[in-house]
Image 1: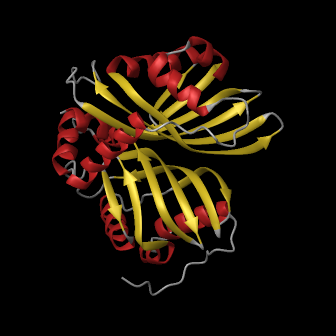
Image 2 (image 1 turned 60 degrees about the horizontal axis):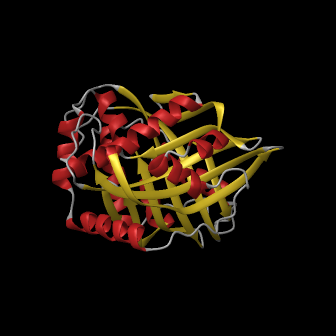
Length: 321
């Protein structure tokens, strides 16, 4: 598919301007065909509910989403990255208010207004996105639409292609056999790898107390907010009870200063393990699980004041059924 229009952004733009600009053109202005300009024919997008290959498939997916949510907006909350649109890496957090007026894979149109939060980590080369990891929580979506979570997870499970399952297996093998790399440029305040292990594996109280401010707030979605360090650590404790994590890795980190004593940090991470306890009403199954997610943090005076963490809980449920 070839675009008849030319987008306004390219390799000479700043990374933030490029990411926000192309998102606005594609979604708010609904120039969906510009995906053909901004994504390569061989670009791969990884997410827990599927792998998308090439600009043409992305155009089809975007049109399908707009058919179900014609008024969808992608409002940029933050872009944390490094480099520029000539050669860069961005972690983009967006909130989408939208109204369901068309059929989705989960059921008929509900007419309900919803808000979802996505994070997209993108590699940009010469004004083209060449690789992307997309974290979205479809559980927040189906709950707001009024659909049953378990039934929705079954729909996701039945639609998973072999390529996705192979990716889960390959990633789990990587996480459990390869040494984790922690050679990331960070603010020096909170070590992402140590925090990931404390949250998902060890529950190390010293690490968690030093990482989170007592008043810290965690956003899992626009409709799930957790307030206070104790509540955040309890949230992760429930995840540790649900999963015996055998491998955990922070795979990319971007850090940007925001103000004196304030940094914004983006971490793309992955964990794998075994389902050993209740998870969202699904009893221990002993099945393997792979989770990929993205976390954004606002670090103030050495401690996390606000955290945004997105991973596809519905995609996790689909692995357990």
